[in-house]
Length: 179
Image 1: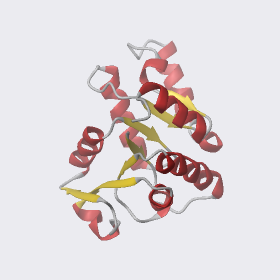
Image 2: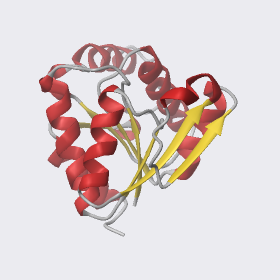
Image 3: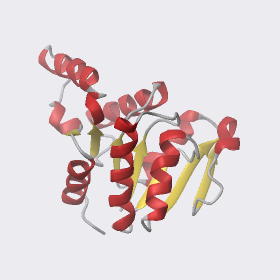
Image 4: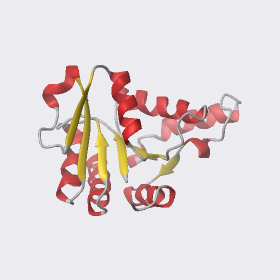
């Protein structure tokens, strides 16, 4: 299984790195492939290191203006011309998506994939890993959108909320299969 992970390239607190390492270990031990933004910094590095250490593959999709931070030992690294192309390549390469803690780039990625799912243009599973309650505010806003008629589909059709890495991984295996 190829899992796209949207997440931060910043160095973060243990309450975010621990679940990221747990997910990475599950992916790697299962022989799965991490498809990620290709960075060798911050939380992106934590996940890539964990997948690699546990025996998984690394497929990175960097972007030209961030190329200097791209991981050198990835099994495959593609360099996109811009962020829009990068997102499209990440989604095209993956069987499913997991969203971890992140900043504006991650928020952009998660809202785009939810919009695609809303319109039926993306049918791969999406998991929102809510480490340390990081996505409580986003989930609250999405619930309000649903309750007030701004969403033409139910939230549970857009993404699966996971409290732990194990929950996220179990959902992926149920939806996509172990491969």
